[in-house]
Image 1 (cartoon, one colour):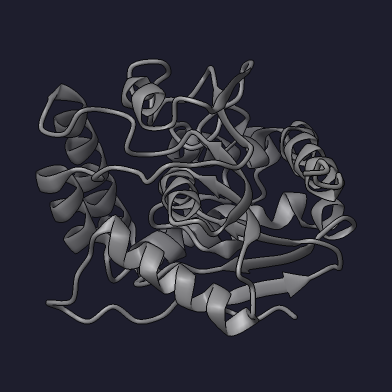
Image 2: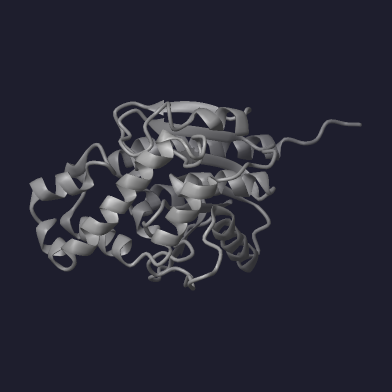
Length: 276
């Protein structure tokens, strides 16, 4: 079932796809077909993001508050646990939910929260995101027309993907529209820069952290160092030549990265417990 706010489809073990900051669930469209062939997939739009649950001024705008909404989504679906797949902010949220005991397995693609708060990494990201916000607001409706031009589209998306030629004008316009209508954009940015992303609970299920080596937003490895301490048992994988949203650059490789983990976790969970 597809709506403006979420996607649900497929059959099999439950899987939740969690998008990044200022995006919507539609960023997962290139990988939905192969994932729904193996899993019951739910892809929500996050709190305060375009089409998602509304954010009201003054409400908490922290990563934990967004994770709370995802837990409510899982509860409404009757899911105690699910395979969690997230990108960027969604990668952090997947790890946070895993630390709350809600994961069957976790795949975090270029997750946020991997740098020490208050340092040069935070300052660089704040400048980048505030500049992007002003540019999107300035473009307004013109942006939908301009991204029809391949060169402008490549310039606009160069921080998001390494292969902008894979992105259609329609999809690029939807990305701009989603970012422009993200109600939680500035409140979240303020909280994230001042307070960081906090910590993680113990994660005792299979976890993979995968990073595109051409990521221009969360540059690897400097934006990943703290995660080695927060998720010490995670498996690390480099995605050669891919950008910040690898599911847009190389859907096939992203699906492989995900299904390797979910199938391994499923095999482990199917094994009978040793006799006492």
